[in-house]
Image (cartoon, rainbow, N blue to C red; front, side, top):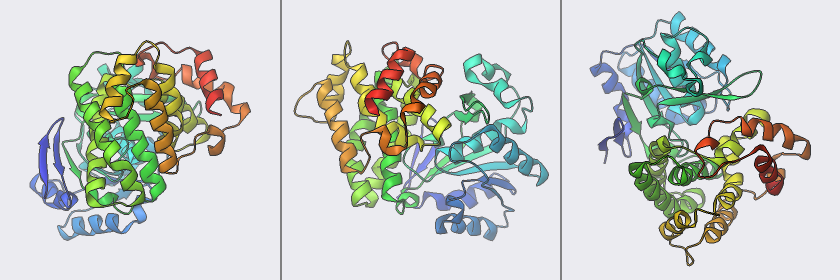
Length: 378
């Protein structure tokens, strides 16, 4: 059964939803899509089936998959060249956060040709996003970033490794085909890491200091869905658990319009400096970041604890839950287990304090706080 949700864009959700893509493109007179994905997804049977289904409808497909797992500016430039040289009329992003971020950044760049980082939202670059953009469709293949319903793309500088955020309302996909069947064969490790990414989005959005009751309600529901589904989706996946994780992931991306926080600012430098998977970086750091946030915000943590149906409605109980959940889904508790060394701490702290996420954390975070958190997690 495929359901339609018209928030924040048109979402076709349910098993088999991705099969609707060819007819949708034909209906909208789109004959030459650039399909953006990553090198792994490009080799998977379901992706090849999607491409074959498009070709059966006489749709001329060009696939671009030359991207890094933590996307950089040069990925976007290369993809735009392919778009230009092959005469495309639309963009379809298929994949996890990396593929969808690159796809969205190409959508921006097609008709905005100044330096990509002129459009960085953190320096007010969204005001320069004034031209039309190509028709954009997204199909998520992981339950993690929720980038399919996003209006921004996070892209790193190739040289400095600093992450930039490209944002504009017109970068929202026209339609999302969210098909849990595409996530059924994900390896347990990817399911775990992306699932913890979704949980981090929902938790940090709920705690973020910017007032937004609508996002807070969505975040709490996302937290509950993940608590009911993630362990099963990792260890004994079925369609129900995968479906709940996919909608919870999507909800997390809607909720974090309210903001993110300290956990993401701890995680982003691991990805840009050490090429750590973003979800894994969030997963290892979330217990420590949540512990940092408890003091002064106990009422907020009580609500999270009650949503998780914990025996005690305290911040400590939430932190203990996060460590325990990581254990049950195979995520290590320490940064040293994922390749972080003592000599990385100072450059990581420098990148973390420069990151865009922590200004919305419920309490201020200093460079020394970041250094101490990295050392505690090491």
